[in-house]
Length: 491
Image (cartoon, rainbow, N blue to C red; front, side, top):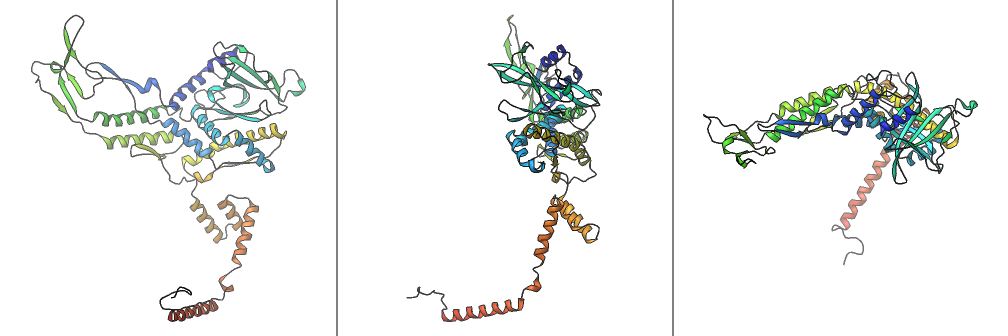
């Protein structure tokens, strides 16, 4: 489908990213899907014929991207826009943003690029599309900043699959006074022929946005694209770690084969193998190529004609050490730092150690937050413009810092600073509770009110006397009624 879109854009005299970039996207997609035919399909000679096998896989490419999505856009991330916050979150909820947004970041880190695209549908509802890299076609860019772009989506129209191409360009070709504003071209292309077809009547071929900023935002890992230095598209987070992905799968495949092939094998002389009649009437030894228990050995004049048993030992410890080393290198190469993944009990687990502010993961996470935050702010502003026509709305993003810091360490640090007179209580509450200065001051007032009730305000002596009197009354009651019957129970 991507080839059809590219050819259409070329025919319309549009310039887009190079073919090399998209060929690499196809390679990254294969690793994300977990099966690369040229690598995971292999052949082994069993002494008679070549047998085909599939390599066991750890699927670490997808795992790394899942973890990056969890670190950057999880359920605790919140978007605030003052009085517009409630309406903004209603629109995000209607577009299933909490789920689709995290999935888009996962795909952006896998394929190098992702995009939010905002528009109004025929019912005036605000829609946010989530577009992956192979459906994104930059048309104009300056210093890596994409200003005009085309986005492809597969749709079904009149029972046929067609490609909906949304072209976002700057400057209405029919009006000079709106040259700084964006307009949208809606195109429909036949998936098979690549020719333009008529779109639905309710969709206008040309839409003026009256907005001087693009109604799309690109997401990509904050790393340099060394595959194509001039490309405006991003690079996969594991683009330079393909060898490490192969290493993980190679060692894991060998590890699993230790158990598959570690069972007892039997060497069978060729003379004792089953015989099958050939077409010319001559019988020949027959051996099932899929049989992994018996191995056929060629005859020799001096060879014995008895079955020989082979029992191999399993090198589990060596393989587990090799897998762990492969995971450590992959984790380092993908920005997760060494020690992120641990191979335990036959599976990969994510380490739960506290991330210090000097660790590789912390620094890389903060670096990627810059791009994600900019995209989310621009997306919220675009939504506010489509909804209310607002152009200067202030948006803030509160990220979930609990994934990169130790809460107990933060509390202890603030207590020591306050006690040493190096920090105010208000600042300490703001950092611990992740709140504003106003909320921190209100919390201080509540704490002050609670501290007004002290132990000196309570007459502990009088309370003790009352308790003693109650105990004396209880003893007198027991003497009068030693068995413990209540009034009315006694007969």
